Image 1 (tube, rainbow, N blue to C red):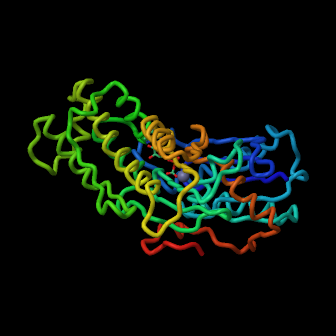
Image 2: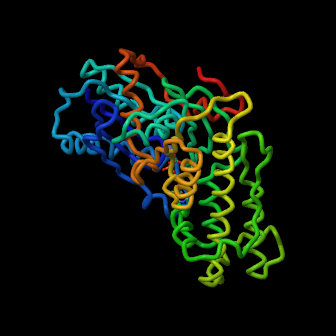
Image 3: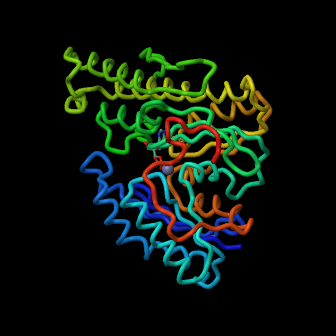
Length: 359
Ligand code: KG4
Ligand code: ZN
């Protein structure tokens, strides 16, 4: 069964073709990073216009890569939430148009749930119950997954997503947006013990995390190094005065604190929730899962607890359409589809403060 998946929630226009939910036949991603870089963040209007210009060539490229025609498809899926609404509309409308024109099922996919599917591409089926974490630029959430997908959101970041915190910290030491990967690269040469930054664990028995305290402490540390006493000063304008050693040590200390915060919640899950199940596996997804320190930490925890671990390859940690097509597969296989008037929505149900149990 061949499913075309489209992803356009933020600043990547992507199309992929996945066979039977596992085999990735085509995976095309057109990134807009260069367009947004001068603004140090994603500009929604620029993003939606670029999606519109790129979506059809991206779909054509995916069909060519898979060496198939539109007629060979069995379903069309799109990430319909969460994301920038103008951007989501492009992929969602293209998918609906194709589904309507080809008389195929349309599947509306939640982007956060799709990130949890990325580790199952090109891999054996995962044992459930599984502990899931999505750590990206827009989301930091922990889930319980059952055989049919997400069963419960266990906790989330109550403020910044981890990737967002990485990007903001990176900007403070003068790195271009999105700075998370650049900060991680600098960190590999740094001393992670030089600056003592907080690991805000909140309640140790619960899964919610917070990154705002870490961000503030990091900012103070940067200002202190720069000899700037006024806490209102924006360190970005002065970052070029930091030495390479200071930047590397700052990056390493930040990365260690942020990743420790995430790993503490995975450990909590694997040690056992009070009323929860014993997990058989850990499934991770989202851009921050390409972070080496997080990956190594997850491998260590999974080994210690004797559970299976699914880490997506780097290309499927960040936004991509293979995870969208993959996540749609169980529903297509079950004969389900979504109506063509399904709306694109800026929020995931998993992003709501009150979201816990599945729909
Ligand atoms: O999943 P993704 O592509 O987009 C969202 O859905 O948000 O994640 C992008 C985020 C950015 O914040 C980026 O800085 C972060 O993932 N990121 C990293 C690394 N690679 C990407 N953060 C830390 N370390 C990395 N190696
Ligand atoms: Zn994402």
